[in-house]
Length: 388
Ligand code: PMP
Image (tube, rainbow, N blue to C red; front, side, top):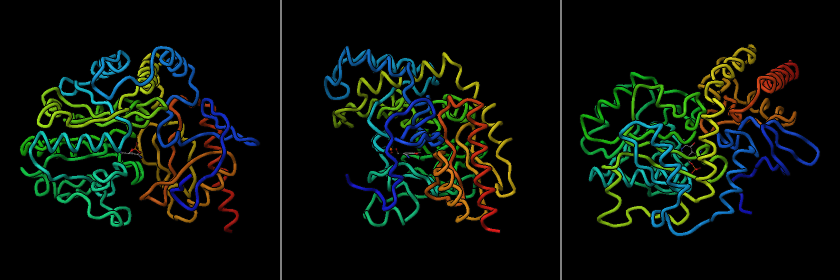
């Protein structure tokens, strides 16, 4: 197998259930969820049942958009019922990066423009288009040339909004909570200023809710708490209920441009695979039926109350995407390693090396949160003792 780094976790997991990952001689509590994917826990029986039912009906039939596949239609209808009137047309793809690519093409085709604005330290994916939206040359320069005409806003600073978003801008890409910068939420006045400028210039406002969507912040979608509605909503990760699925969602009027001149403006063979749509639909129903979102604020508060230690300077983030902020990067790394050694899977961030990422399955219980917090505090203290 090709490797993505010299130091993968390399833990062999044989079975996963709820928040637990089982290796041969060790059990891990999963507080990463495969980076915000397994929102409803591993081997969730409701999702498994939906998958079994779909397997008995059919798997792949034809490239996306040709056949009427009832599971896709039901999922699109259900999503539309939760979304405002300008987000009623769903294009299903395979991944987050592909959904971002689709959204970029949609914006270019709809506006007839080619420039984009993104945020410094954003992460939107690893394909050429998505990589172009990344401000950090370390990750992108080796793959140059990427797309030209990309400008970067500093998150929550309004000073450059009017200069950078112009009548040449096709779209502005925003993560409502910046993922790889360490779970930093956008402020409402900043988002409102961007929304206003997009309306003035005709640029599309695109929210990447690939990590924040499907309940993670305590709402089905993070934008629902933000008083700002995007023109395009991008989903993936938890959206697939544990299977590969992405989507970009917009209005019928905007989405129509992909059907004509050229016809097949975006094509995907496996996009909206029936198994992925079955899992996503089951996840959506489960989030609603089990009132999962209503439990999130209490769980967030419990983490915040229990995770108190002089070494933890602050906890950023919202809902069950939380970042523990340390002063010292080395210390932070050692705590992460020690926790993994103790059977707790936590993780770091691409652009914020002094932070610990907590992104557990949303179904984590209060007792499990107490255990997790205990392991973290214990390992912080052990590390302090070692350094004395
Ligand atoms: N956008 C965000 C905010 C993400 O967190 C990710 C994945 N980490 C992506 C886009 C890309 O998604 P994928 O890995 O499915 O291509």
